[in-house]
Image 1 (cartoon, helix red, strand yellow):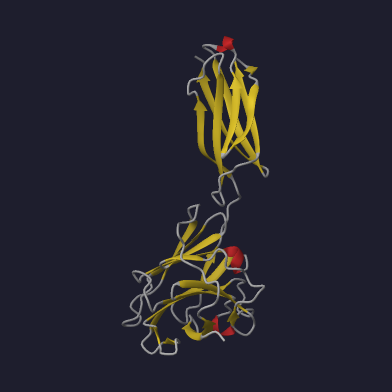
Image 2: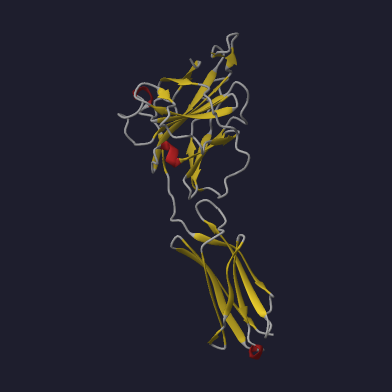
Length: 301
């Protein structure tokens, strides 16, 4: 049987396992897309002497639904510290743990690992059909997890608790006799509410180039476009490439229209009679019904 530990939650005592197989390691890097929709939740300070003191919790999310909880106050994650985030994902106190304001999920960071637990009607546990916690990562006192693993909710009601001074006894069990805690929001003040806002997925132009920079009559002109997704930051390596160019109002024939690695590429053969004329064109990538375009205009040399 797994060892147990008592976590002081925002409203009551919640019993959670503190270590399970497959616990999550710290994040090695920041997410690919910068988080937005940032909200700062202010906690009262100085509630208990010698206790960790949460000052603010900053919550944000990106267009991929990755939610970031940044806990401020304690300078860093240290040995003997436990961080817990309780989440009511359906805004219904009757469906989750009745002793913790209806929390449906608990994220727990302790002893160098992070784990996600789900209320099963009796306790917080991990079962085969529970979310896989595949997106759960942490970096010091910042914990990130995708909203899809928290019931895919658009509103997350949550509270954060930090406990310090936890030691391990001779049996390997956690000892709370010298522990102190801080809850945010304060005990008896319910949960904070955070609304996850995900913008429609867009394609973004990360890089565009012309070669040569000054088009030359009788020679080829190549346009390259690197496009990324707004939700994940992933660089596209496929999709439909659309090429268009005219010289003096006449269409220029396309020689190449394809992806080369991560670059969408268009190549045109400029007529030898085009010297001194304006060439106008564009390159576009169409992927899953979304489009990004870059246009250009230059004098042919």
